[in-house]
Length: 272
Image (cartoon, rainbow, N blue to C red):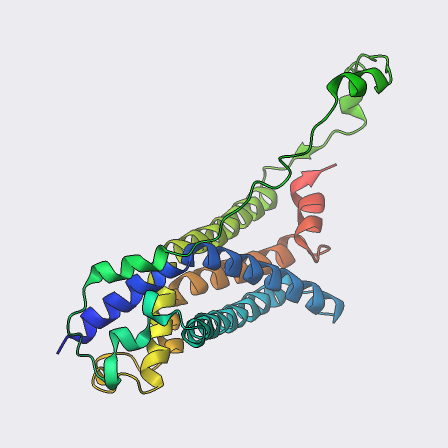
């Protein structure tokens, strides 16, 4: 009888070889950021002008969207596996039944090298557009002659579009907080993309456990996929949530006439 840890390692290797998990997580994080921006815009239209309230709510909404996307990914992965089984391709690709035969964790005759078959069957691209040609001589002859106009002198232009960077007091404090918030969002995204194989494979494995396919290993793992995802992502989420709240509160306090980040920059950081 193989241990649950060995079974989970085989399961994760199978998913990693079959799917571009980090690419999927990158798409998911892009959608999460967009959902946060959309939530902030909708809250602003609803009358929530206080950035110290609106931004944390937007971060929380985007976090719920992240959980929804993870659940959709799990459903996609399992449905794609069932579709391969119905198409009769299960014998040449990864199968839950191959790893968990007859509802147990016994893996007779299985080896990790069999997972390498997952890379087979990739799509081919036929070099579209190879028959297209251009008559360079005709294009050059038909091209109109446009006189080259030298760029205008930059002297005196700074007076019409000049701005000054307010690095005293409130301006520098708001700029530092904004950079910390952006850095936290980017850092959380990089971390989740890097850890995507572990996070998503664990979530999918917990779903398989919950379905009753591996009854003997259920007690040695966490009870559900949501808890596993929460444990893996709660720290980055809390950091972004706290920094969003601090920046929003300080922006509302030090730049009271602004209700968006753009207005904060125009009114309190960039003096035009």
